[in-house]
Image (cartoon, rainbow over the protein chains, first blue to last red):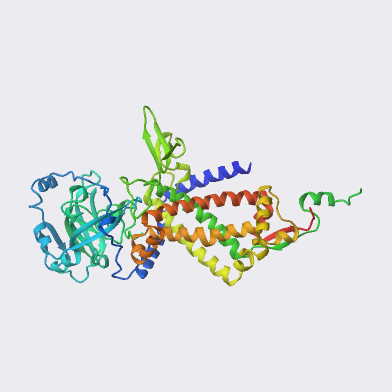
Length: 249
Length: 285
């Protein structure tokens, strides 16, 4: 009898949990500890603390491609067909000198090569070698204005088909992470040009955060003082769908 | 033989010459029940998270193209979806429970079934919210319990086995007694037995800290702050596997713990963990 009581209680509790889980008030309560997590992580993390870097021997033999693997738009197809010669990275928003940078121009910046581990929120990890320009250098070239707080990344791919564009991938990070030495705009992967499946021609690396922050198919970088006005207002595609903005955990 | 009125009835509910002692402090009791709630939610939300990528690896990395140590999956055969658990190269079919189970009436590919996950439906984002909230609660609760345990000497007095309890002969006798569900009476019941002490120590100072540390190792942020943790566990993928294995050991502990609680006097044990009072009977067996 005890066992059936326990089983019954368990089922009730589970059904109750589901109802609680669907309640926005409860979800907000549960997310209350996110601020605690960010604050304590930032306390422990030196501005310059580097994510682990590895050697060539540690490279994943096959680096899983996730999310979009080929953007579905006419625009992207055209760019790809012409080897991204017409592609320009637009840098605007709260900057003194808006930029339109070609791949060749990006390659002329000092570059950083790093062998790091990509941790997906799903649980898998892969180690790859990335080469690109530190984001901080691009931001300095554009001249970040006072009052700026975040850097938003607009991408070419749509993870959801929508009429208003809200299915397009986008992400954002704050200036602390933007100027971190390992935050780079990568155009090379594993010694070759960044493949389409992994975000050609340019993707973001933010090595102290989970994989969904590492936006692919970058088209435009926008410096802002707040990301609340964009799309779902949570600062990123997956954030608008319930994931944390600070993906250090 | 003539029994005075009432004594016969009393003999059924509580043995003659039983006395109540204070067994668990308030802090221990509160921490205990808080832990029960936390571990339940952490387990079930953890399984939700695991379902997102039900493959465990060993080493510095691991994804679909890499060989898993443990995997739960599904495959479509002639006319049905079949679930399986794979450990190493050994595969066991588990359709209906692991790998494939019913969700809203249909056979769904999911590692752990809906009745074991929070939320019951697929929602990794929500699972993480539950998991991290209760992880914080667990850690804060644990810190209070640890401070209390050291400061109030709970660990030294109640959990540290005494010399006589560690003698091999004594330990062996305890194992036999446990197997026969023979429990201490009288003064011997005032303290935890050696097996209890050892298992509680393993849980408090071994399993639970390992859960926390392996969990923190999976955080990219904290990995940058404490890279030696990943190295300690043999890589981030290993830490994830250890997180799962340690959780399984905790589940095993809970099963044994609850069984023993039931077998050695359910009401007495429950009462002592609720209001702190535990009945010691002085009967000789």
